[in-house]
Every structure is written in structure tokens, then in C-alpha cells.
Image (cartoon, rainbow, N blue to C red):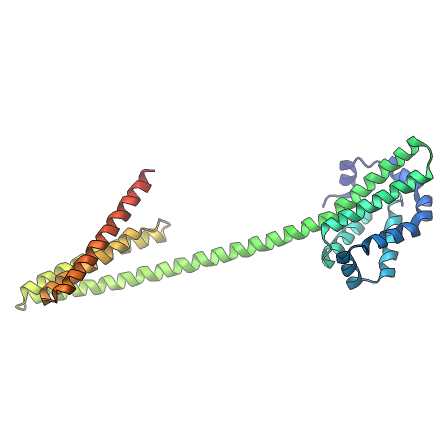
Length: 300
């Protein structure tokens, strides 16, 4: 919130306005009880404000407070201490949960009461206008300071929310990075295992089972190739690259090709081989469609 001097400048509140309001103090003292009573009656007209008032304060205490606040409107001195007082009033409104539109409505009620007071007291038209303009300025200034507390409270919530959100995002990013790192290490371990499987299949070639060994070695080599693709894809992902689902579909396709090769060597049931072949066909179509979609996206 800005200083009182800055607020006065923005609302064109001059020393002449302060003197005008101070001139109204004796009149305000005469109307003090009736204005405070009228204001309290206005608050109790609305069930929501009545509930808030009765929950957080007594009627007599609140009426005395508003009587004092009403009198300070015409004290003639509007310094930083006055600004702090208005801020405390606004913060109290926020603390008790008074909706801001009730503050605006209540200030409008007080404004009209002051205008009636001026109109009933001063017969001269120019004099009434002069006092009314000064009263409007101090009311606008009061309203601006009090309602700023609501804005400050909302901004505080936003800052806390953004800070929490940023923290959660950072934590999630680190967690995801850690999972990707674990996945890369796991893929590296599996690749080593596939290399061992490939070596085992090669050894079978020299142990009198060349047919089965060659087909099995081809399948292992295909899987090793796809493991390399997976590793490269995950490393790119760790470096900030995009996720490529085509690689994962390719792994399933290669695994299915290897299974068909082994199934052929085992002389499995024709239905089983037909099912594996049909599955491979479906996977091939999926692979083709994803590949085509990625190419179209790249062109765009």
C-alpha cells in the first residue's frame, strides 16, 4: 500500500479538503449518535452481516467503534497513523470473513448519511457542494485502503499457491528424472543379459544344434538391436528430448518375431503359430500407423 501523501495526491485530497472536513466536526458530533445507530441498524438488516457481527463482537462495542471511526472522518489530520488505522480496520474485515461487497455497500450508506447531514445543515448551495466534495474524497480514500486488505489477502494466497505449485513441479521433475535414470540402468543391465543370451546361442552352433542356434541367435540379435534403440531413446529423454513410443512398439514387434522363430523350431500347434502371426500383423499395422503419424507431425 502506498503512503498517505501519495494517496492524497491520487485522490486530489488537499489541505483545503482537510480544513473543510474539520469544519464539519461540530456538525458530525451532533449527528454522531443517530448516524452510528442508523449504521448499526443497516448492518442488522442483513442476516449474513448480523451473524458475523454477533459472532465476533458485541453490538454496543461495535457501535462505539463505528462512532469513533465516523468522528475521525472529520478530525482534519490524515497522516500515516490514520492510514495504519484504516489498514487495521480492513484487515479486521478480512479476518472475520466479511465479504467485500458488504464493505462497499456500508460505505455507500455512510456516504449518503453524510450527504444528508450536509444538506440539512447548510442552506447555501455552493457551501454544500464544497463540503460534499471533500466528504466524498475522504470516503473514497477510506474505501480504497480498507478494500486493499482483501486484495493483499488474495495476493498472499496466490503467492503461497504458486510457491507450493512450483515446489511440487520441481519435486515431480526430479522424481521423474530419477525414474528415467533407473530405467536406463535397468535397460543397460538387460542389454548385458541379452548379450549373454546371444553368446549362448552362438555357442550352440558349435555344439551340434546349428539350425535352432542360428534362429535363436537371430532373435537375440534383434532384441539386442531394439535394446540399443531403447537405451538411446531413454538417454535422449534424460537430456530433454521427446518421448518416442514407436521404439517401444518396435520392441514388442521384435519380441514377437523371435517368438515366431522359436515357435517354428519347436513345431508348435498351427493354431498357436497362426495366433502369433496374426498378433505380429496387428503390431505391424500399429507400428506403421504410428510411424506415419509421426512423419505427418514432423512435416507440420
